Length: 352
Image (cartoon, rainbow, N blue to C red; front, side, top):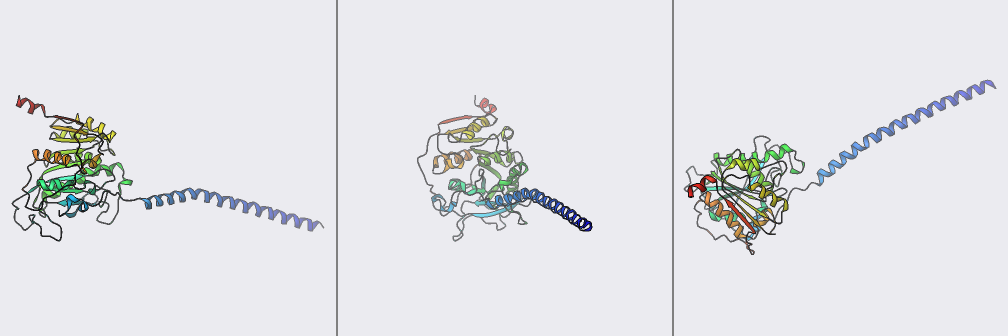
């Protein structure tokens, strides 16, 4: 009877130990699962966020704009030295025709072309692409300028490196934004040295930027002072993504045109503030509620003409080959609600 009792006690004791051990193991497994779940959830969330990223989009292609009909272009990519990004841009040269027509533009045949066209570089704003300029390039081409409409780093078609790695501005760090002006500097050097585009004058350049692109334009001049002769800044900002143009404007000391509208409160205040940093010739034109950035140019040929005239006073255009008359779509063009202009003190003294 006693042996039976001892045997039962031993069985109970072993059962208790196994129960405790099983419970402990279950607790450990449960805690491990809880610890790994947030990490798994975070990883899934990051993957879902990346999958949801949509590349920036803009207005329809320029070829669908009435003013761009019959105007030829060439899409080019310029490799960046630092990270081998392929910077995309659309190049227009006066006389260049669509692919199905014979081009009247000078070709790279080993001879120096009789006509060289100064280069106007267009820099778009955040989440835009080269398409945002609509038919504005037509006004510049008609006047005798070559035009390079760029997709900034991480935007549009400028999202792939030579190795196939893809980037997007949505995940940019401060260093990535600061690389944007350096990209444009490389593009300028490309045209100053390239023999493939002899009709493009890479030594006489005008930069036109809207919003973020305006800030990029200013900072570009800090390393390309000789080539860049004038700036047109549309709705610039005091600070876009860490790109601060005030010091660059003070150093530039060449003609600067600023355009702003009352539709963009931040851009409007910034434009008036930046005007005071410019020491050289400067003009500021403020419009009413006509949109902001490049939107101010859509259907507003008089505003486009103002920019073309401004550039023409600084850089003499090339002679445009004979061809069809370029027409632009037009709406009623508003007069500036406010305009102010100043010339350098030295120039004012000479006139007196």
